[in-house]
Length: 220
Ligand code: B16
Ligand code: MG
Image (tube, rainbow, N blue to C red; front, side):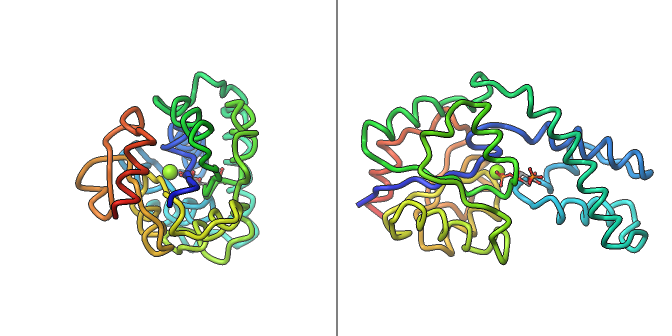
């Protein structure tokens, strides 16, 4: 029986990808690297440090900086990113999310967040939905990021449930792999092609209907 929902943040609850992009683009420019929106697709669901590594590699500068300097670059990006997320309001919830959260409350389904973002608590506060979640997995506590199943195991643990009693929702391929490896029913948001590993998928968050998800997961 499904009793919990473990949600990714960026691309599922709200769309912060554009803010990440603007902040990375501005940092990359300062060190002479050009990135565009197509490149940015690769950074979705990937941690801050891994994102920086990909950008440096893209600009053939992966050997240019010491660990300490890279730390400083990642912090600079985050400082700019934080100024963008200050402007987030409840209107920035992805389409269909308000309904999904309401349905979860009515159906007695507990919620947790499994996001790679260290800014998740602040973002959920700005969206005014933080108190609807039993917990948020602390990404700093993880040994490995997605596609390791660890973050989704922790998401189920926070709810006091087994992975089999939960549904995981993700928009990144690495995230779907993490949910599958965690032994959870996986729901993807995205194109058929990118979500082919998901147990069930929709193209847009507006199509996420909790009753349908529970029916699909329980019939699985
Ligand atoms: P931060 P998700 C991810 O969120 C973003 O998609 C990814 O672009 C970002 O680098 C990562 O969070 C870390 O974010 O710099 O705020 O710690 O999709 O896992 O919710
Ligand atoms: Mg995501």
